[in-house]
Length: 365
Image (cartoon, rainbow, N blue to C red; front, side, top):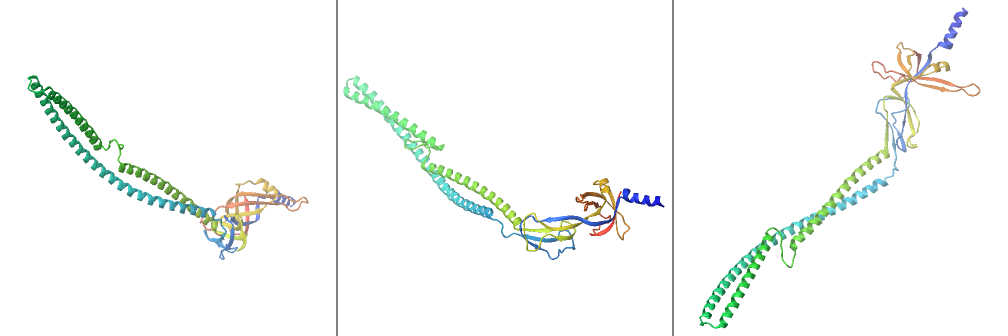
């Protein structure tokens, strides 16, 4: 009899690897607020209720969000849009002026080519007349020379005929030079170059067109640059508006089907960012917590297999150890707590029961 009692004592004292009063609950999840503000709790999310995934638990509103940067971006964007509108209008007006200058330059070019062509014809006619005069002067000189040699004509008449022939040849050379000059100027005009003494190779209307085209190109470049700035400011403004919306209001929802364990803040309370708001028990991640002896805690490691059976049930559910907690006793030997936390696998049928608070037997295999 004593041997049996001793065996039972040793089994209970050194070999027992189970907890008879383990508590079943869901994995605890603490929801924190991402922003500061005033807390408003959903009346349908009282402590103890089981809520489906996505249920709105509470809202945090911050009416004192700093919108200085958003206002500055909006002001910059509006100024850039006004400048873009002004540049667009100026570019349109300049484009019209370029069109007018182009027509004027083309009209001048056509008229100038016609004038130069007529001048060439005039120079050719003058040259033909000079040729005739030179031929006539040459014939007169030859006739006078013959008559003077026979004594019929006076010597003075021969001198006059020679001077007339020399002048006629000089006029012919001059007429040819003027014709060549007029032809060169006309040929240059036909290729778009207007060469003359008082001006350069471009007409005043063509120079005006060139200046307006340069101005138009500069205005278009400035307009495109401002357009790119407006687009960038819009992107920044939209991003800032999104950020302001996130800072202005935040909604806390249930991340999974869970039981509300308790609220850690009160409705209407001014809370800070990151503050704990509500404690939930995740129905999809059942956990079992049980107190053990230090000797048992020392033999366990995270990942060890476990079995759990709730009171009143015959089904064993399996899982594994997830955490070990040890709180050393006080100096007088009082206190001290040693706990094991085990995570159970979901039921084979996928049912989420949220059996929070049920007692049962936890066995370490």
